[in-house]
Structures are given as structure tokens and as C-alpha cells.
Length: 295
Ligand SMILES: NC(=O)c1ccc[n+]([C@@H]2O[C@H](COP(=O)([O-])OP(=O)(O)OC[C@H]3O[C@@H](n4cnc5c(N)ncnc54)[C@H](OP(=O)(O)O)[C@@H]3O)[C@@H](O)[C@H]2O)c1
Image 1: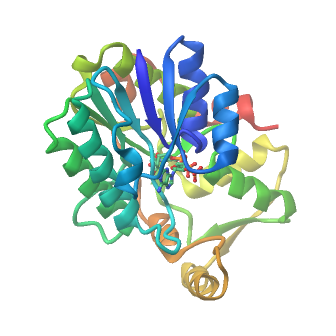
Image 2: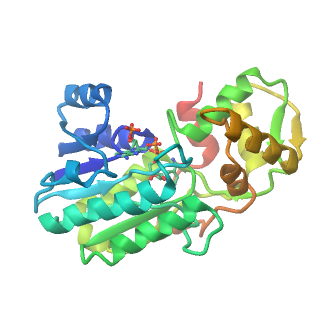
Image 3: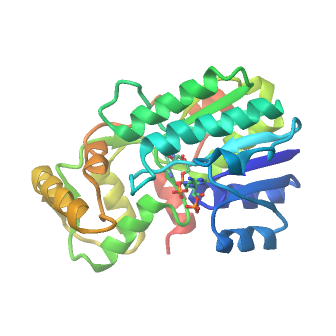
């Protein structure tokens, strides 16, 4: 099948490119930098230089036979790259090009908790982007994943970097909020089923692993898998937020933003059987996934 990917150079996209090539699909990907263009071309992917916030760069890039995978998203606003410009305007631009071409199917990666009334700019604009896709008239599938983990994922990478140098396990607040991590290989399996049979999956699906784990449990399991045995250390959330607010003002890129800290304060979970019920297989437990990719 001819597959077009926007967001192919990120964590999820990188794994997806390798997976789809191994399945024999023909890929066309959007890339912004020369470096990304080079590494994708070297894999045999057709690369289109473009940016989803610039509609002119998207004109004419899609064909009727294309299956479009839209993974572009940001977790932190930086300069012109706001949640509105990337999630809402960017999605609208790509959907317009998909409509012009009359593509066969449009996949959008939203996020668990996406809600038009959310206080979080990230979750609110993800919900607005979902609406654009749903109202487009295109055949669509939307995934709303909880935390996706695997080699090079941003969340685990930040924690691993911190755990390498910290003598304790720093936990913002009490770390009680729950998450439902899904292993990237299982996410790929779900999308693989959609690609094989798109008409069976015209809906929005919440995606999560087989456990509800608190942030504290996630940090403890990760630390254990790295061979560390360290005591937890609770950092009051108020102090973390004050630090984040200062970092956001003085640093070009803050290690953590106020929006991200607020996301850590609420549960991000769904039905424990969501993958089994919708995609027909049991996803891997967090600890088993860590064994595959943490050294
Ligand atoms: N990872 C998770 O745990 C998780 C959970 C739920 C939902 N999601 C969603 O899944 C998607 C992929 O996540 P990820 O972890 O792979 O993110 P990521 O590693 O940050 O990748 C983001 C991708 O978007 C591209 N991008 C950003 N701005 C762009 C623009 N203006 N035009 C074109 N491309 C642009 C990036 O390209 P460059 O390389 O050029 O920057 C990169 O390819 C996102 O929508 C995210 O919100 C992720």
C-alpha cells in the first residue's frame, strides 16, 4: 500500500517507518530538516520537504491511493510552534490536502484525555484536531494513546537521564496519578491491523497497556530495571511548579513545563482491556516491555 506519514522523524514515526518498510509498504514522508531527509532517503523512503503549518508546502503531495498517517504533535509550545498552530492549523492544512486528493483513509494520532473542555492546551487542541478529522468527510481512524514507551521515547529518556545521576527517585507531588503505558511494538500492532483492514476501524480508539500504574510505580519499576535500588523522595508539587515557571521564563527550553506538571496530576487511563477488545491481542506489561529495551 502507498502510505504517507507526517511526523515520521519522531519517536513513534521512526519506529513506524521501520515497521512498515519491513512489511513491504511503499512510504512517502514529510520532513523539515536536511538531516531527516538524508536518513529517511537512505532507507528507501520518498521524502517530501514540508511543514504542516505551511499549506503551500503540502500542495499536491497526496494521491487518491494514499493512506495518510498524521503523527505530528508537540507536548511543549516553543516560539511559533504553539498547540494551536501545530494541532489545529496543521491538522486542518493536512486534512484539506487529503480532501483535495480524495485519499483512501486518514489516521490521526490524538492523545488519551483529549477533551475540548480540558484546562490543558495540549489535550484541548488534540480534541479540536480530532473534530477537524471527524468532520472532514474522509474515512478516518483516530488513536488516543496513553503513554507510549520504547527505545528513545521522550518520557523514559528524561527519567533515565535523571535516574543515572540522582541518588534518590524524585517524585513530583505524591506520584499517585495513574497512567496506562503501552509498548511501541503493541501500538504498531494496533495500527498494522488498521492498515490491513481500514474499513473495519472507522472510529476513535483509546489505546493503553494492561495495567494502571501510578507515576511513582513507573519510576520505581524503571529504576529497578536499570539495576538501581534507591529511596523515593517526594518533591512538593508547589515547589516543582514554581521551579518550572522560573525555568520557562529564563531558559530557551525548560526541562519541565507547568502544563506537563499539571498533566502529571491527573489520571490518564482507560479500560484495561481496550486493546484486547478492539484489536484482539493482549499488550505487554510495563516491566516486560522495559526488559526488552532498557539496559
Ligand atoms: N509518545 C507518547 O507517549 C504519546 C502519547 C500520546 C500521544 N502521542 C502523540 O503521538 C504523536 C507522535 O508522538 P512522538 O512521541 O513520536 O512525538 P515526537 O517524537 O516529538 O515527534 C513529533 C514529530 O512531529 C514532527 N513535527 C513537529 N512539528 C512539525 C511541523 N510543523 N511540520 C511537520 N512536522 C512536524 C516532528 O518533526 P521534526 O523531527 O522535524 O521535529 C516529529 O517528526 C504526537 O502527535 C503525540 O502528541 C504521543
